Image (cartoon, rainbow over the protein chains, first blue to last red):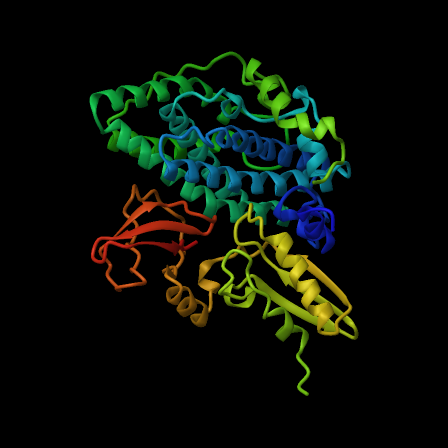
Length: 281
Length: 161
């Protein structure tokens, strides 16, 4: 045996999960049939949107490793990133099944910027901690409302992925709301920073509720009331004000037009997979 | 010699992240079906991003192979979503013996925003409920970090989901 790593590789392919790639298909053994009456291309497009939201948000959250203000929050943000990465894997795998093309890795690592369907909110560059809390509060409040409704989707796979996600995103929302309260209702200085975080992300909330042309899933506009109710509850406890309703530019993420930050994010996220196609380690 | 059934063998597979428990204790093992030489095992992930699924799949296959079941198919089932209510009574006792507080009942209805008013966990060392959640996120996806104000010890608990 020439080195320690050879011993690990000896066992079998499945054991690679512990130190590199070669992951199993997260939908292994799940019936891939698309239900009668559902447009498979639209199901794929819809799963791609929600999968891309989770993937890009997960990537941004993972940037907090070694950068969070406290170890506990670094662990928390990494855990939330891992949950969302798991949701992304399931959703991208479902998109691949429904379209009959590719797999989760090809979708995550080999698409170009204009092929990603995530909302702009998740791709914004990392700001300060209060900015991240503001983004996570908006994102998880909206996503929880969405996943709760999708748990009744006529597609059993999407319904199951969503029902599972509800349990996870409930904790994400609770975490973000807790910090928004602690900072917003804290010192004058922490209040100022938290309010600035909310101001910075608020223009990107409009896109979450704008209609898209995919026939599968939930009408985004139907989520607005619940979103506003939960946000009002948090803002009230956090002494924060809801910023005036302004939107930036066109809500274009769902049609593949992204902000300047997206190209840089993808260049980093995809660099290894593109430099060494099909590599496992 | 007593021959173990395929279920008995699969039920002895340990969870890689909570190795004091088996996948049967945790409710990850959902079904084992034997048809002639062919064994189908159904497992469900605890969390969407749980990195242990690959190892569990490999361990189930290997342990069944070693016990004389050469033809094994391990399938993922996603619905119904895993809940901590499926952790067995024995599993709960074992967790507490290892200093990890077992979960309370999982929320049954639509979850409202609690703004930090969750039920306190019971300290697995001194049994006090005078405990504080330090962070809802711990060393693995399924655990939170707690501190007991009675005995002053930190501990982990399995989050009720």
